[in-house]
Image (cartoon, rainbow, N blue to C red; front, side, top):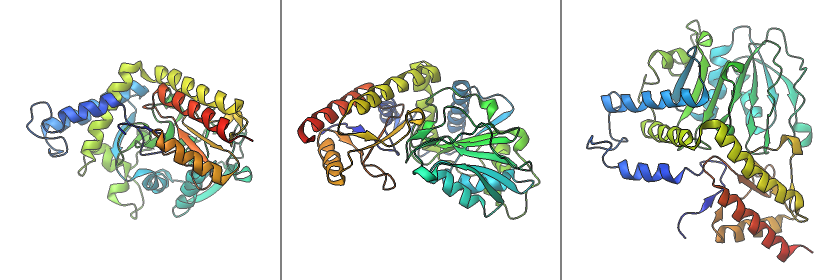
Length: 361
C-alpha cells in the first residue's frame, strides 16, 4: 500500500522529511560510526543532541530563562502523580474535568492532596469546555489543573481559565507545538510527545524554576522530583535518547515551516476543511459544541454503529487509517496533528462525501 494517512490519536504521523533523515542517519550519526540508539547518553555526541534539542524547543515555544525544560519518561500517568507530589504545599488542588485524562489526573492526585473539582463537562459527555471565567477556586489551592486539548472527546481550550492568581498546570499533549502559547501563563505544562512531536517514550515538562523544590516529603521518589531532573539536565539516569533525538529533528522541521504561528495557520486551515465538510454533511455529525471543537482531534458519527464500522473499514482500504473513535464516544475520530498534510484531510473529506452518496437514504 505504501505510506498511508494515519489519523491515529497517538502514536501518530511524523513528518516524512524527519523519518527520511532518521533513516539516513540511523547507522552512522554524523560520522560517529554508530546509531543514536547505541551511543552513551554521557558521551559528547549525545550531549550535543540534547542541548541542541532544548535550545530549539526554547526558541520555538519562547521559554524564558526562569523555566526549566525537562525530557523525561513515564508519560501523562507519571505526571498525574508527579505534579501533586512536587507542587503540594497547602494540601489542596483545583481540577477542571473536561474528559477522561483530567478525570484520571484528579483521581490520581487524590493519593497526595485534597482535590476540588471546580468545573466539569461530564454532564454532557464532555462535549464542551465549561465557563472558566469565574471559578470558585479554594484560596489555599496550590494549583489549577487542566487538560488543554481532550483527545478522546475532541474539545480544546481556546481561552485559558481565570485561575485567580493560582498556578496553572496543563497537560498539553494533544496540542503540543500546534500553536503559539504564552509560557508565562503557566506554572507548569507537560506533554507526551507521541501525538504531535515525536515517537512514544518522551514526556516534555516545562516548569517555572521557583516551583522546583527541595523540601518535598520523604515519600516522593528521587526519580519523581523535578529538582532531581533539573539539577542533572534531564540526564539523572538514562533518558529516552533516541526519542529525544527525533524530537529534536521535529523541532527543526517546525522551525523550517515558519514556527508555531505558521503551524497554527496550517492547522486551522486543515480543521476548517474538515469541519466545513462535516457541517455540510447530512450523514455525519460532530459530537462537540462548535466553539469548543479541537483543531487536533475531531470525533464524528453517523448515528448507526454498523455504518460507522463500515466507514472505518472502507476508509482503511483507501489508505485512511486509524479512524475508529474511542469507545467513550464511538463512531470515528480524525486526529489532525502537525505532520498530517492538507492532502490527507482533503482525501478524507472526499471519501466522506463518496461514502455519504452511497449510504444516505
